Image 1: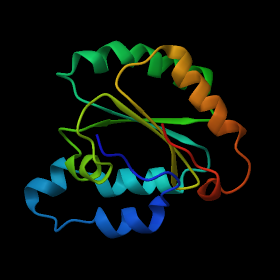
Image 2: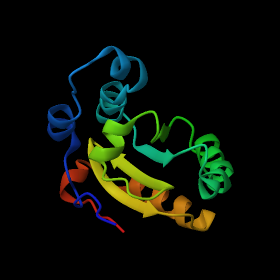
Image 3: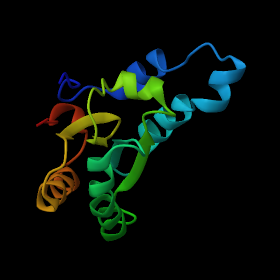
Length: 143
């Protein structure tokens, strides 16, 4: 699976690649631009969970993501993005299999965790991102 480059700065790239010619059907069904803006402008790190309702591994991972959201409330923002509804942003992140977790800090992808892992893997990734100092564009890593 191809993933975004470590330290990829999202702000310029997302704004350049996500806007789409809005037709009546895409305007109602794909709000990728709004989601991209929320990710880029978040004052706290964002855990982005790409999922779909038909994906059994995604449903298995859901309680872990909810627990992380509760545990790190106010310090990490959790965004669940349904790939069936938000195809543009899923394509931008090059989602080829789900579940896929991305951690974004300062508009930069700093971690990618594909598939279902043990809860400790997600917790360690969140803790690592929270421990990062300053601009993550210089210190980002990916799995």
